Length: 342
Image: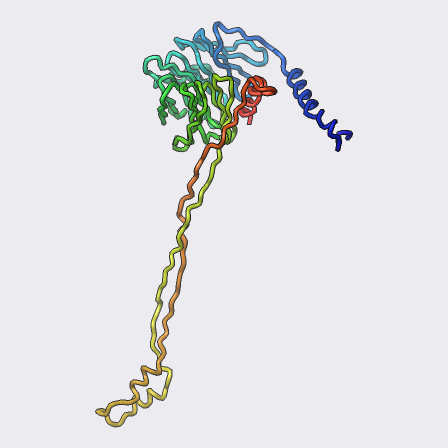
């Protein structure tokens, strides 16, 4: 209460908040286990309920750890080169692994049996850098040094789409609503695709070096990229729905035309003429005194079948650099964690 209207006291508030944040981080985060692999660890992933942790290593194996005891419950073998990435699907029933041996392997977590080995990345040195499932686990994407991203249907593990890029593709990720797929490449370009047709939405540029990691938030409105220039870049997307202009159509329809006599004496004169050969002076009045009525309806209709155009565009870039004050590694990692959570 003493801070109200007190300018000098108000200046303390950011320090208190920062100190509180620091205390929360420092007190709540502690090392609970140190897990040893047989080689350098390239990738880690928790399953959905956080009961399992998978690690991929340069010793060509994947180790699966129980988080309750942090003991190894399974060592998965079969890759002939280093394991680059590991990923669980949404219901934790599948674990996908990618390797420098050019393959992707998928294991069923109920038995740890190998389901398929995917060998679509088969050019020379086509190491597979990254794998990712979409939210409903219906799709699995893999990115490779062969400059492609393969998208598989998990019902058949057949390729449903191949995205071809200009350089090695280091990273791939789906948005949480599965509406977008992002990729990061050696040439410093990240790309955003919408997944209904896998149409390219935008190139995300400005990276001087390779884009090693990409992450999307829940609905794909934010895309974060990690580059080797010590920066995390955040791109904002806006989806605009444009309703097309519709031209009304006017239709005029004549229903009926009738002629009626409005002078009854004219009819009598015409029918009582004594001399049949004499010219009638009354007959023309039958036309002059008649009235013509036309019933007309006008109908205006508007085309309601026009399809609205949906456009997704990329807004200005915000960059968070590790070297900036109060935006060091912890801040950048926390932001990426926030993207993953939400």
